[in-house]
Length: 171
Image 1 (tube, rainbow, N blue to C red):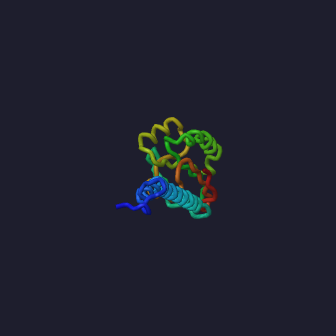
Image 2 (cartoon, helix red, strand yellow; image 1 turned 120 degrees about the vertical axis):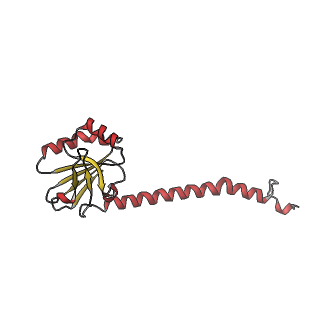
Image 3 (cartoon, one colour; image 1 turned 45 degrees about the horizontal axis):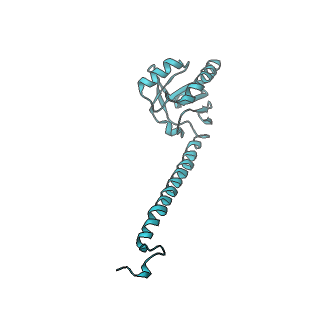
């Protein structure tokens, strides 16, 4: 039996009112707080991971070009490199492709350009390359990963000096 002392001022039992408050306010508030904390943690840690490669030796990444050549970034030490991570579905990648192509042509023989396809199917990568026609080798990584560079999404471009040190990163 519910006594007068167990009722809220509106006449509802306290346990129902408490349950309603928990269901309507506490649970959604905790869910929002958890989501916010998770997103914040992810953004902070992604940023830390992505900046750590600058100043370090180039990661051990090997690319199989769409023409079938195998290119090891560490094997190119002695030559400055521009390494661009791209994807066929990436609109900014398509927008920057002509600029990268022009830079590759104007520095041919002095700077090596490599395009690393990420998160794509072979068919999509070939179709993209047919449209873009990069004057430098492009293809997926067959050893190592874009994660080794701290890349979270394309496009990202890295400049590696002739000693094999990553000296800059452009998002």
